[in-house]
Figure (tube, rainbow, N blue to C red):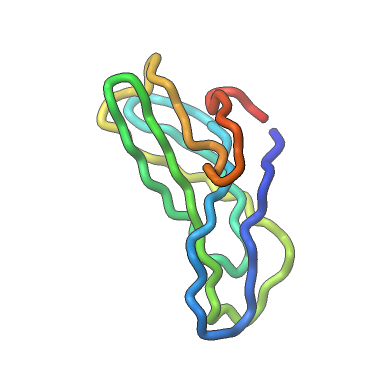
Length: 113
């Protein structure tokens, strides 16, 4: 499974960086939950996930922010599993959001990259 996109890392400073969208891949969809895998930076504060559901689609957005108070950062990404509850099983609903919106093309999020 290939994950693209690493969250940025910034050491020190007092500015509050904007949240960055993270690529994610579907690991499993069991019952009324889905588990996704995302890459977060070693000094990031995240990942944070939001889920929007309709009767025909589920959109998952995963973001992170650099933690300016982190004392040590490296360029290594950390794979994180995030399990998200759904109001009902994913079933045949479309799954989207696996690619951050800025400059990215939509793709089928149920397929591994």
